[in-house]
Image (cartoon, rainbow, N blue to C red; front, side):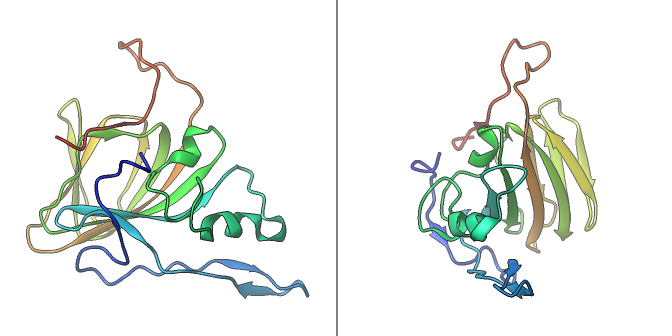
Amino acid sequence: MSSTFPHPWTPSASSLPPAKRYITTHRPTGLSTLGPSPPLAFAGDPTSHTFSRSYTLSSVPADITADADITLYTADAGPNSRFTGELVNTCESGSGAAFVTVDFAPGGRSDMHRTASVDWVVVVQARFRMELDSGESVILNPGDQVVQRGTMHKWFNASETEPARFVAVLLPTKPYNIPGTGELLKEVRDYGE
């Protein structure tokens, strides 16, 4: 998906104030310090929704020796770069994790999709409606949480006048056969929906 993502990277998304993410590390003396924390880079369609890879890990447990994780994340390219257009590519390897920020324009919606991951989602601003491929849906307010377990789903900003934001941590899953389908769990996205 990184080479075919349909929209370019932008410094911010929708009309929300830019989210700030701070990365901590250690000084050579052992004291804690703030490390390099470049601005979030968003991809997507600002008239609908955009996402940022707020942080990624190539493996869990993480290798933080000599700031290896920070080096991979702040690189201009590579599977763990903040500029990689893949939302959860580190999860598909079966060993990584991703932390994402997702912004929606007023009335914005995502396509129906599935990630090959368990996603811990927290609404931080405005209201969302999450719909499953079964037709079930739920309204989510700030602070509400979803544990998305590899299911087909779609997000809607429930407001036609206010932008909305959620954050999520995406963790890999072991190979899994989706009940009743005979299909192995894999990422599914339909940008043409």
